[in-house]
Amino acid sequence: MTSLNFNLPLYLILFILLPCHSKAEIIIEEIQPLKFPSIIKNLGSSTIVLVNWKGGIGKATNSDFFDHIYHAGKYKIYSDTEKNITINITSINNNSGIKLKSFKVRYKNKTYKSFPTSALKNPGTKGATIKIGAKMVANKNTTPGSKQPQYLIQIDEL
Image (cartoon, rainbow, N blue to C red; front, side):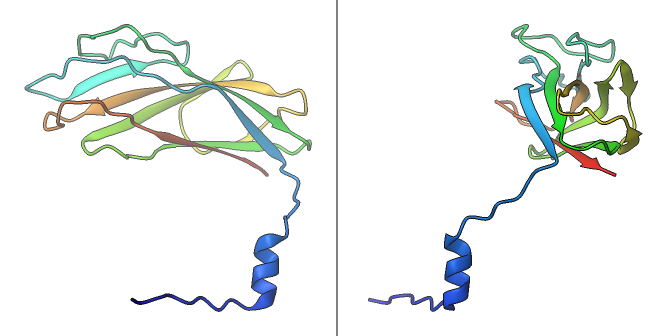
């Protein structure tokens, strides 16, 4: 029988055990994530589904649906400072053959479509809502089945 022995210095153990207190400057609260409908894959070409920031299906969509359950992503963001913010959103590409692209973010009555987008007005302690839409593209070789494309929202203060 082999055993593993980890000899950590005492100061490292104390650092791990003692709680660290820090004040976050930006808080992102998920109200609902971006959701695409279940679709029927196109056999000869890429399958495209566009859910816009309003929660509707866009004209780029070229597939039939199994269900009509879809909606825009909706988040509330807060800050404890007055600094301008930058919003960045990217696809994580966690499913082979599927990409999220053409993100659109609605923030403070303006729509943004290139990221990162900088020098935006701070949401403050009362917060502000952002809505997200995107185009999902599944290439023609993507295997059928349940897919859950993911994205990353990053908000920084300048």
